[in-house]
View: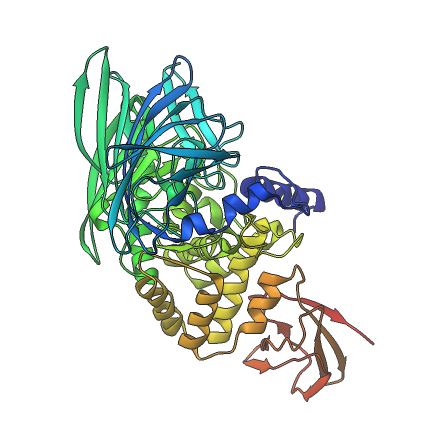
Length: 546
């Protein structure tokens, strides 16, 4: 039993973990929100194929400059293309087929008038040139932007955290999750005494004049804009491999030079984590690009094939157990959680951030699955139930569409507990596992909607779970089981729920389990004993009435 003030403290900590301390509020949406979050006519007609991104970083004045060649396929003929680049960055010029294109600016969006005809099915390239001093992150990774800092030895350390803000905070791009670039080439110019690490695999280093070096990286798999990130610092590298479902997976670890021995000890958790997640979710999605942990000047982020790690080589969340059960101190939160995103978030990506529960709910549940892998099913159950302390029930998990708006931070542990409850209803872990693997194989490297995931699960499991999804994702209410108990007669119904809510529920007796099927109407059953409890694996509340 924990004292109430301690429970409130952990709840506040969880809110800070996943929101950066910003309370949600009802918003009035603007034209800028629609430009950023919508799939307008200047986006829909072209499909991203490849970025060839060149960026030079100037630590002395916190500026960057470069060019991004954007290769795309014409889906329907059009002449105006939306390119996103946030103020105070500036788009200098745009060139296609050797001709300079004109453009107009509308807030953080540039509308480029293409000079030549865009024929359906054609593959075209647009070259964008840019420069400026990007927005600086004040509280990364929650507040996005460039990070110009120093390590403990006062050496330059540069990176970016831009989920939410996404890529247009630092380079011109098609900045919307629905369209992932199929591949990219990344070229970062930095002082020659620093190392630039990024996604995919390093293809070379060029030493150039004025004490500069250019690091070349290549990503072969589809990647979302906000995952494209450089890490620039005094890095050392050590390597390993693991035999996985896709063959030999290259493991690369990049940490500050003085932290190599700490990292070798802490990162030993990577192999069992990968084995666990391949068992539950299927093949690691990015064998061609490898797996990397990169020490970062902020807590962490799921940057595809180059996960940001800043957990101070501690177990838990900076040494704290978010579940208050003790199980969360048995493993490194950032290694486990951010790596889980390689399947849910990077392999399967939602088209609109309003559906980000698909990323965060499944990934938060991966923490439970890893706990089970190490310590058994009871420990995993205790862990996920413990995380309910952080649930706010402040607003629905799914937010408004087409305005670049996340829903409640409950997309993490409320959604994870919803999934845990569904797993109890399925009552067949073999089927549950095949369903999770099926999601990742059937939606391999795709962008999806919540509805697609919900429909897939219901069809695969042969269960009508729509009211369960609506209850936990589209309202802020936790269902309440009202009940009466008179001798051995048990009467019950659902309240505080969506219309026609009908989630089954398990009663636990000393020697057996008993399932009931509550609805909004009173029902009653005769029990052999009044000595039972509601299965705590279901995230519900109970209320005894007269």
